[in-house]
Length: 274
Image (cartoon, rainbow, N blue to C red; front, side):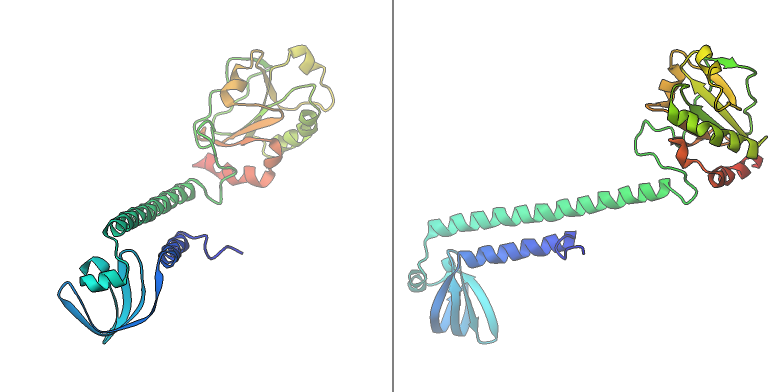
C-alpha cells in the first residue's frame, strides 16, 4: 500500500508537522500566568491566560479567543517576567525566517517537480499507443524513425523487391544456435504473408559459412555485411535481432524476434494499402 506521506501534498504536511515540533521544542510552558490586561503595540487583551512562551513570542488565551504577541512589544515588567533577551530573540527570528524560506523553496521545488513529471507523463502517453509493438527508451532507438537503407553488402541471389511491403530485417549468424532456431519461424511468416511481407537476412559471416547452413534451410533473401557497417547503423548488439519496417519505411520494432507474432505483422499490413 502506498504511504500516506509519499505524495507531494503529504510532504508539505510533514514539513508543517516538523515546524510545529520545532516550535514546541523551544517553547517553555507557563505556570498558568493570568493577567487582567496585556497590552502590545496598542492592542489590549483582557482576561489573559498565558499558555507558553519562547525567545520571541508569548502565547495565550484571552477574551474572545487566543492570540500571540512578540515579547519585544510588551511592557518591560512582562518582558522580564518572560525572560526576554533581545539578542536571543533576534537570533531566533533570523533562524525562523531562514527555516520558512527553506520551506517555501521546498514547496516551490515540489511544484516544479510535479509539473515536470506531468509533462513527462504527457510526452510518454503521446508517444505510445495500443498499436505499438515497442516504444523507444533511448534517443539512439530507430523505432518511429525512417529505416536506414538496406545496402552496402552483397546479396546472395537476387535482391528482393521491398517497396510497399512490410520488411522484417533479420540479423543472424550461421554458428548461432538461437538464430538457427528462429529460421523456421521467419520462413513461416514470409510464407503466410507472401507478397506483403519480405524477410531479409543480414549476416557478417562469409558466404561459405552461410552456404554450409543447410539445416534448417533458409527460405528468405540474405545479404552479406562483412564489415558489419549496416549492423552498426542499426545498433545491433546481439543475434538473433530483427528490425520490423512498415510499408512507409518507418521502423516499428527492433529487438529479439520472439516479440514478433503473426498478429503483430497483420496489424501493420493494412497500411500497405494506404
